[in-house]
Amino acid sequence: MHVPTITANYLAILALIYAALALQVIRLRRSSGAAFNHGGNDGLRSAIRAHGNFMEYVPIIALMIALLEMSGASPLRIHMLMGALVLSRLLHPLGMYARPGSLRFMICRAGGIFLTIGLLISCALTILSRLPWAAFADELTDQAIATIQFLEVIHVILTL
View 1 (cartoon, helix red, strand yellow):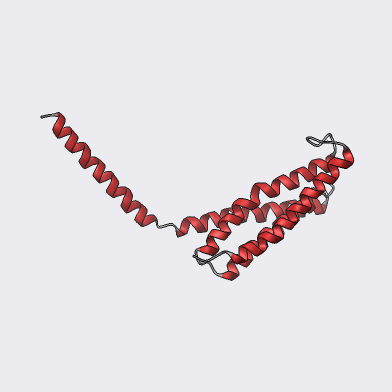
View 2: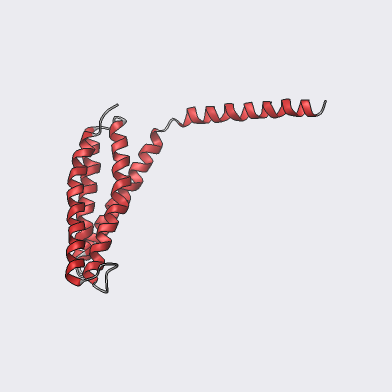
């Protein structure tokens, strides 16, 4: 089995981004005195959502990319996917910290969302396309035939 070293290197970068997001939440919690929730502080609310959004998307996308790397996807493809994930995760907090309605807010949030959802769908469809559907269908058919034959035998025994 191939160890996903490319994915692992990008995950190290993503971990540093995640740590920065976490430290920003901690800093804002301390300065605003909000131990829980955001305490009405818009900056803290944005920091919490940037941190949470990172955690909501990065693990599943990184896992799918690691699986693609382990299954033999080209190194260039893995670099492109992980690079896009890093870019999307940098854009999102930049948009979250921008003034709502500003150009930076719109470009960074939309760009981050577009890249993230695109990666999610692209990786999922790629993995699904690599599954051995024909073998699965054959196995399912064999199991259905065996079940029908078993039920026929039971029917014969019960009607004797």
